[in-house]
Image (cartoon, rainbow, N blue to C red; front, top):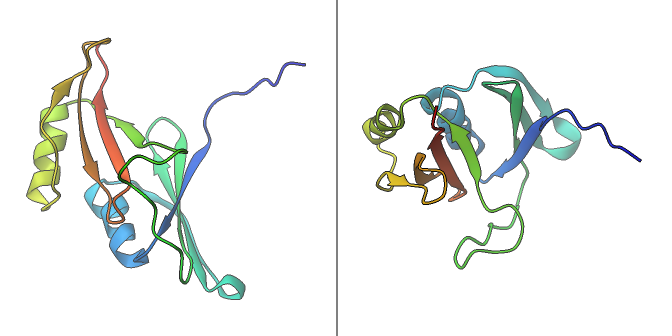
Length: 132
């Protein structure tokens, strides 16, 4: 049986502080809002953001969600990676917003440049400049 998968549709994140995470992903990272809904029965926000290239990021708020284990690395989703055209400009823009970022490194296998930072809930985010 062939699945005929056509791509990655979305990644979902639960935020501890919805407004802070909404600001980070929408204003700081510049992801456009596709839809935003208050779900009264769950006391939860659901925000759909567009990721360049066709994917989406879903941002949720839920009351009393437990924190995500980050160190040591836990099994499961390791990090979310965004492709960017100019890694140095991307890093400088984050620094200008007060986001703590790591130094730019070079992938030993691909030669591509990348760096990491964390979102407001310490979810590791990678910014990756593919080699042309």
